[in-house]
Amino acid sequence: MSTNIIVTVLAAAFYLFSSFFGGGDEQNAPNYQPSSTYQGEISSFTPRPGVVVGKAANLRNEPSLKGEVLNVLKKDQQLLVLDQTGEWYHVKTDTGQYGWLSKWLLSFTADSPGLKTGGISGYTIAGYYVENYQNDPVGYQAFRSNAAIINTVIPFLYKIDQYGNVKGNFQGKMADLTRLKGTTTLALVNNIKNGNFNSKSIHALLTNSQARSKAIAGIYRVVTTQGFKGVNIDFENVPSRDRSYVTLFFKELAAVFRPKGLLVTASLPAKTSDSPNSAHSGAFDYQALAPYLDQVYLMTYDEHYSGGSPGPVASYPWVEKVVNYAKRFFLSRKIIIGLAAYGYDWGLWSGKALNVKAITKLMASKKITSKWHATYKVPYFTYKNGLVTHKVWYENNHSIAAKMSLVKRYQLGGVAVWRLGYEDPGVWQVIANGF
Image 1 (tube, rainbow, N blue to C red):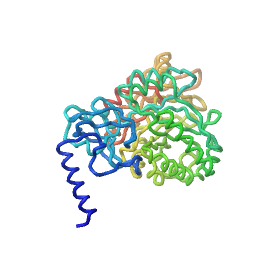
Image 2 (image 1 turned 90 degrees about the horizontal axis):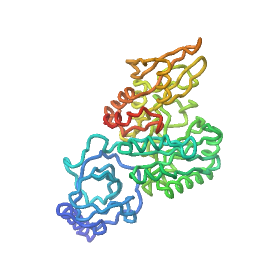
Image 3 (image 1 turned 135 degrees about the vertical axis):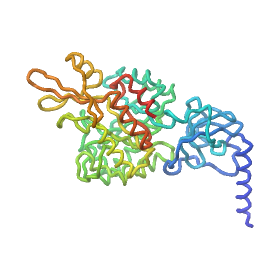
Image 4 (image 1 turned 90 degrees about the vertical axis):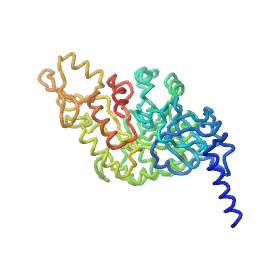
C-alpha cells in the first residue's frame, strides 16, 4: 500500500472519530486544508437541521479560515444548514445568526427540537429598498416594523454607465439597522439614466470588454467595501441583439465573485417562453445564464402595465406559468418570485401607478369596495371621474396569500417585495404564514 493511500485512510478514520466524539476549532481539522476561497457554484442543497459536534466551533463570515469569527458556537448547539461549498457549511443558528462553519464540526440530525425548520427558515424574504430622496423614511419604517420577518434587503441605489463606472452608496440609519439585525444585503446595480433604464448605455457597456472589466471591478469594490453579501443585477431595456453579451457579463462576474463567496443574483424579466427577439426579455437567455446565478429574482409583475391595456398586475395563472418556465432552467430553490406592492389606475389612455396606501385612499374617497377576480386571484374595481371610466387592478394581502401557495407548491426559494413601504401593512405576516 502506498504512502498516499495510508495517509488517506488514516485521515478518513480520524475524521470519523472526530465526528462521533466532537472536536475543537477548525484549525484542528483532520488532515485537510480548506480553501480560502469559494470554489464553484453554490451546490444543490436542501436546507436541513444540524448540531455542533465540536467543543468550540468558530462561526465565520466567509467560507475560509481567514474569515472573521462572528461567534463561537458550543457543542450541541442546534442550527439550520442552508448550503455548502468545499469544506464549509452556510448555517443559520438557533438565535438567527448566519455564517460559515467548517464541515467536520457539524453533524446532521433527523430533527432539532430547539430549531424550527418549517416556517420561514431557509427561505429568502426580501424587500427592495428605494430612496426617492435623501433620508426618505418610507422604506426604513417598513423594514424596521418587519425586521423579524424580512431577512434580505436589496438597496436599489447603484447605477452603472456605459464606461463601467459604478456610483451609489448605502449608508445612514437603514444601513445601520440592517447591520444591527444581521440582515443579508445585496447591492442592486441598474442601468438607469435620466430616470429610465437606458438601452444605449447598457449596449455600449456590455459590448466593450474593457468597460465590462471595469464594471465588474467597480461592483466588487462596492460589495466588499460596503459589507454586502453579493450583488443583484437589474439591467432592463437591454437590446435583444446583446443576448450573448449579457450571458458573458454574468460569466465574467461569477468568475470574480464566486471565489470570494459572494452571491451573484439578478432581477430577471418574467417570461413564459423564450422569445430571443423580444425587446423586453429577449436579451436574457435563461438556459445560458443558469450556471452563473446563485439566485434569480423573477420580476413577476407588470403583466399589464401603465402603457398597455387594463388588467391584473400579476394574475395567478400568469405567475404560475412564469414559474413553470423558469423551473426548466433554474433549481427551484434558486427562484425568488417578485411580489408587487402596487397597482395601476387606467383612465382614458394610460395607467398611473399607485401604491396600496394611495389605492386604499382612492377607494375611501369614492366609497368603493373592490371586487375579487376568482380566476386571476387579484382585486379590482372601477369608478367614474367625470365622463371617464377608470379601471384599477392592484395587489393586496389576499392576492399575495394566493401567490404564496405557489412558493410552497413548487418549493421555491422565497419572495421579494417591490418595494419596501409601498405594501399593504399586513403583507409581511401573510408572507411568513405562507411558508
